[in-house]
Image (cartoon, rainbow, N blue to C red; front, side, top):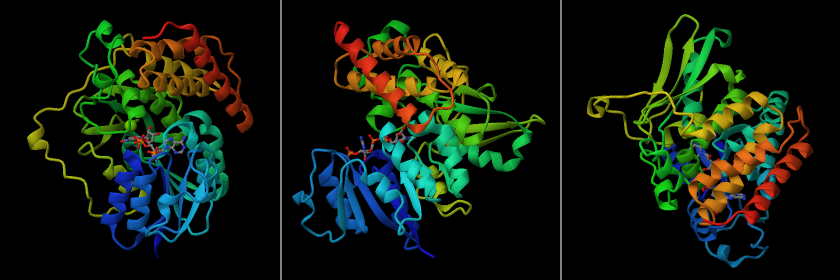
Length: 388
Ligand code: NDP
Ligand code: MG
């Protein structure tokens, strides 16, 4: 039987890798839907090549009738942010692969979970904001959530070596990003170009900046809490600059099971599509003999304060991770626009968290309200701050 895949965010780094994987998997996998936010020309190219039943442009500037699709594409075209959720529940979609960046993916992943789809999720922010709601909705509707984030894919694979009650802890590895060996002051003043120069992974700009602050690992700790139903005190982080050991699970008998591979997102994307089967992979095989050595060290929580903030927010739970994520999204956007220096990202998040009173077990409306509050708070702080 054909597996029909909707790729939300097909113009991004995850989206383009997903298309490569689907092409390599052959005719059993079919592209059912594609979406872009701003890169309409690339979406038009993808639509002509893969001929999905439907495509969508989510940026509000694009209106019905946008002419880029008049050429060799005969499917339907949707417009606006709601089209992601409309695609996620379609009958002709079996797998929803979410490669959208940020909180924007939340309505679509909730819709996919509600419709009982397989949700192959790279987009970690919705899990951070609404992990409780999303995992509950998936369980109630028989939806599977399969992680694409490489660390979580590694944990998911390693967990198959034992039973849930036999897990002592999981260890998420982190490359440490471009500032692992920088002094604290140098890191505070880093430019956009320096922050975007990730040593091992090629990714979109937001997650690349998150990797430089290590907020990415903070978000991943919270992501892991929900995906694997583990308390935060059983989730550790270890710096591993080579990015070969993608993460590990320690069982109660002391055995540690790790998943290794080259740093290539095609591997976890493929596994989320083919699970429980494994297929011939497109990613280059691992040659450990050429690697020399693999190294590990504990993270410096003073230098990478964002990681410490993530652990605090995870322990507080409730609305704290929502504020952490929203403040981070706004601060990173301001940094990428050249409005603030690198060190300000962490300061803005910290200042926003300080003024927030944590609330528990929130409805979707309350979560979104908190998200909006945190974004406004950062914008106000930005107005007050002297720039760059
Ligand atoms: P990119 O910036 O490369 O791509 C983002 C995609 O989302 C693009 O297709 C973009 O459209 C679309 N998009 C942007 N804003 C919106 C919006 N407001 N509404 C709808 N669609 C939008 O990001 P990545 O591919 O790097 O990351 C995607 C997600 O996957 C993130 O959550 C990230 O944390 C996670 N992830 C990524 C990894 C990677 O290797 N890249 C690894 C692990 C996780 P357009 O380009 O047309 O504007
Ligand atoms: Mg990751």
